[in-house]
Every structure is written in C-alpha cells, then in structure tokens.
Amino acid sequence: MSNSPKAEGRGACGLFADLYELTMLSAYDSFHMGETATFSLFVRELPDCRNFLLACGLDDLLDELESFHFQSDDVAYLRSLGMFPESLFDELHSFRFTGDVFALAEGTPFFPHEPILEVTAPIGQAQIVETLVVNQISLQTILASKAARVVAAAAGRPVVDFGARRAQGLDAALKGARAFAIAGVTGTSLLAAGARYYGIPVTGTMAHSFVQAFDDELEAFAAFAKLYPRTVLLVDTYDTLQGVRNAIELARRIGEDCRLTGVRLDSGDLGALSRTARSILDQAGLQRLKIVASGGLNETRIDALIKAGAPIDIFGVGTDMSVSADAPCLDIAYKLTEFAGSGRMKLSTRKRTMPGRKQVFRRTAGGLAIGDVVARRDERCEGVPLLEPAMASGRRVEARARISDLRDHSSAMIAALPPRLRALEAAERPYPVTVSDRLRADADALAARLGCARSKSE
Image (cartoon, rainbow, N blue to C red; front, side, top):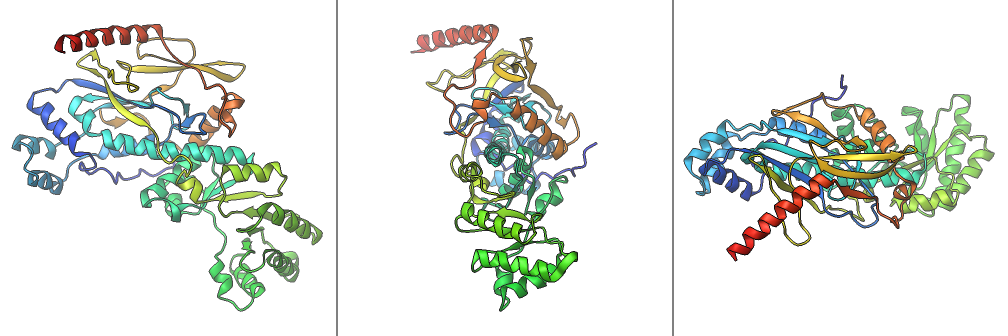
C-alpha cells in the first residue's frame, strides 16, 4: 500500500487547455464524432548531451486526469468568449475523463519516437487533455533526466536538492523535488515536497544571515549548535578555512558530547578548500565530520571534483538542476495514432508518426539493454514489454506508487543501460531503436493510401 498522500489535482480546472482543444471538442461534438481515439506522447529528439531520458510525472498526471473537470466559473468564462454553441456548455458541466492510459513506469529510460504513454478515450476527451498531458510529463521528465546525470557524476555520494528558490514557479519546485528523488537524489530542502510526497527526506543546514547576525562567527556556531546539536555548520561566511577552525574549536569546547555532523562549503575553489578542510579536521581528530559542498554545482563540476579526488561527502545542487539549465525543454509531441478503429498518421517532413496503438519491447543480453523494438500493441516481440496499463475508464489502475519503489526501479533500469549511455559525454553510437515489421508494414500501407489521396486532391 502506498505511503504517499493523494496529491490533489491543482491543474484539474478544465481551463488548463489551449483554446484549440476546446474548439476541437466543440467541433467533434457538432459533427457527432464520439468514436474512440488513441493519442501517443513521444519525444522526437534527445536534447544535446543526453543519451537517454527518464520517464517521470505519470502519477501526478493520473491524479490530474481523475479530477479534471469544468467549474461553473470556467463554463461562464467560455460562454463569455462568444465562440461556442450552448450545447457544449451543457456537456462541460458534467465532463469527466473516462479514458485509458498505457504508459512507461516512472523511472524507465526511453529514447526518441518511443511512446512514453498512450491515451485512449472518446476523441474529444483525448484531445482536450493534450496540454495537461504534455505539461505534466515534460516537466518531470526533463528534471529527472537532468538529476540522473548529477547523481551519476556524484559516483555514489549523496546529492541533495537545494533548488526550490530558483525553480521556475511553485509547481516546478514541488514536482522537481519529486522527479529528483525518483532519479536518485537523496533529499530536498523543500518542506512542501517532504509533506506532499512522503518518502522524500527533508534536510538543511543554516543560513549565512544567522552568522552575520552575531558579532562573532564562533559565537554564532555555538548558539546554533546549542539548538541543533547534530547540525552541519556553514563555514564560508567570511573566511572558509577560519570557519573550519572555528568549527573545530566549537567541537573542542563541547567535548565528548559533541554531535556536530559536518561543515558546508558554499563558495570558492571547492576542490582545494575541501582538501585543506579535510586535512585540518582529520588532524583535530574529527574524521567523522562530513564535508558538504554546494554553490553553482552541476554534473560537470561534480564529475571534475570527484575525478580530482576532492574529499567531498555530500553535494547540494540548486539552480542548474532545478531548471535543467543545459537542456530546459523537450521536443515532445502528442499525436493522434488511431481513430474509430483505424490507424492514423502524419506525413509532415521530419514529423512523420507511426499509426495505431503500440508497445515497446526492450531486449537484453548479459544483464544490459541492447535494443528496443516499437511494435503494434497486439504483437509479441523478443524482450520485455515496457508500456503498462496505468488508467482504465478514468481511474488509476494501481495506488499511487512509493517514491522509494520508483527510485529503486529507476536505479535498476539505468544500471541496465550500456556504459556508454550512462556516461556524461554524448555516446558515439546511439541506442538502437527499431520498428517491428508489422508496424512498418501498417505505416507504409497507410502512407501510400494517404499519399495517393493527397495526389488526387492536388
């Protein structure tokens, strides 16, 4: 049973949709087009320096879909636009999403043109949730994928999320903390994330302002440690190494009852400072005190510190991870692939899609993934099927997942990727993703028919 509370859908308002999704809903209704449709969500290309993406955001999306509705004020606003027939408003008052969702488990690595999820519902329902689906999956997938790189760079050392204040909005900070945890980040400074998503430990040290509010740094350390004996002392307010020496002096004064846990370096040459700090702490017999480093860190800087042998035990990462600074967006698309039992596709240049409902099979050898096959949903190919039922008739199939379970799944799935894909550098050879013969034949036949129809019309 899940130990996570049900997150109330904050995007449940039906107005979390682009205008054209309402015009489409109205148009489908006007032409009595209520047949079942399937829309597929996928990424066209990997961002630079990404060898894979990590699926994330599904649980929150399912909450939003379950509660998606139009309030009276929403309907009144739409009526004020003067664009829609009165019959639509009657439908909106009772609108609920009743479709199915078939999706990758959160924490699953995926690649371009592989379905992250597929939505099957009456076409108007499937269309109107497009913006919601793309928004919820895109944000957390971007952030989880970034965090996976940071965690890999830390090479087993804990990483803590310090980025809420620099995240781009309240929702991004909250959902970011969740995505980071699934990708392997061990804790967050954001209390709201700890409260909403049980299983994410909250952590923090002290502020520079507390030290500045005292006339003497050592006095400030002593006062704070009296309230919080197991604290990590922030030592770089004035002179970092003097701050470390003041921490040592405080430990000496406290004596055997000292329960300080570490010192935090937040500026300067973190490699050189950590080595000197470690040396003087060890000389003082304080080998148990850990060194926490923060301040402008990202996976590249962490990787360099680790390779240089910096004795840093914990990394606090903020802005760069919280906004995925080097790759802040995805070329993500939500496209119709089936309607009324027939495959549908786009033939646009560089935006061609594959028809029908699909499955992804991952083949392995020696415990490592060696290639994926995108196939028809009703096929059985070699490998493990990755897309699973997540929602049926508008209700989630399983209870909200534990963050710890999602983190374990993510860790195992990433570990099963070839080493070249887990590296920070761009892989010389991309991961092989192919299309099954049956799906290829379906696509070619439909493309030929659509091409012929287009030629006749021209």
